[in-house]
Length: 93
Image (tube, rainbow, N blue to C red; front, side, top):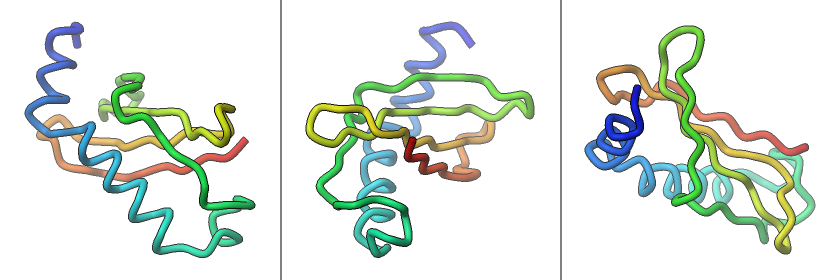
């Protein structure tokens, strides 16, 4: 995908909004120890997205997880080519 197509996919499928809502849902519907964090005082910036086309041709949108201005992990949403959410991935380093 070229940059223009990526930006169009982000707009059409409201990726920034969906990644923020999905992250908040994950954060507040799980206990801290269930998601391997010390505090729920963490955040993401949905405007800071890294795009990657995966080996299985899904679209990956990843954003850093931040705690006190330090990147401590990343949160990723995976979509198929029709814009359907396939999976989310929460990683703490």
